Image 1 (tube, rainbow, N blue to C red):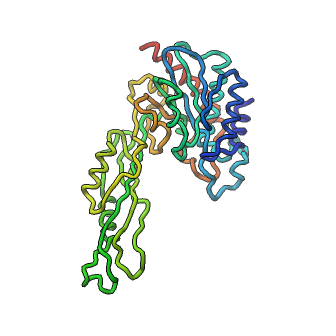
Image 2: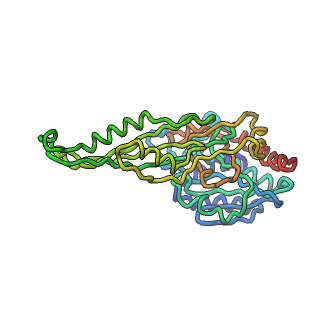
Image 3: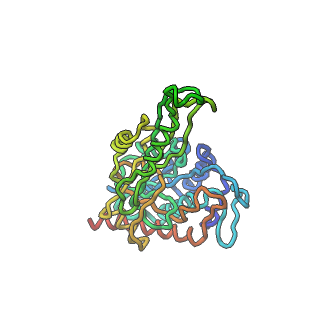
Length: 353
């Protein structure tokens, strides 16, 4: 199967997050046909190539977001046009999956790099944070390093933002709107508005690759009647954190500068970074020819703990989650060559110490 045929088949198989069974079956069948011993947990597929003391995870996700409005073609019907494949998931992240699968096929046929084991894992529900990589890491065993496939233009990403969601509740005192200034009413929406202004001015120290972290208020809800002063107003804050920001400490700081009650709604997507001295970073920089970059988007890297990781793959992050998503033939071919070079380079770096 040629690279463009494999990518076309991936895109032609719908795999909206949580509904990846058909695609997981397809990937399993391909890998078994190439001689791999495939493992499954739910819609997660993984297999190993080679053996040795070092174990390198090679991971990308099978799922996509739901199709949005504005497509000029049917999202689940791949179309080649001007040497690019248009279809849902072509860029995020089936181009990475195709490149990794074809790299695995080569290693299964020709042999893996000496000195280690490549663990290829194609996982589910990355887009929703569900039953994907984070739920089956124990099945994979110990890992020495990892490559997470996301569209980065083949630039090695060594720093990734985390995500801290805060639920804030402003409290006031209800009363009739007509008597609000005479009966001691205290408008909770006004309190929330003051806090939202404070948040709009709040800054955290800039990260060298990611820049500043700024809180964003994303949802506001308050009041039960148009003629009643509201006694409660709820709003959510999304803060994309940078490495070095401790989620618990940040939440405590925010609570200290707001009138509203603040509690953590979600803090499991931690910011991540990998030192430039790590073998996986050195190998990625050599394979790409460019230095490390930062990434504002979250990925399954968030669940890999302290495993040295690089997020990198073919495609452009700015095409993701948009109508008319595409990947070019040149990007696919470059991705295949890049992953082969990166994986060989990692074990070469390790052997050199």
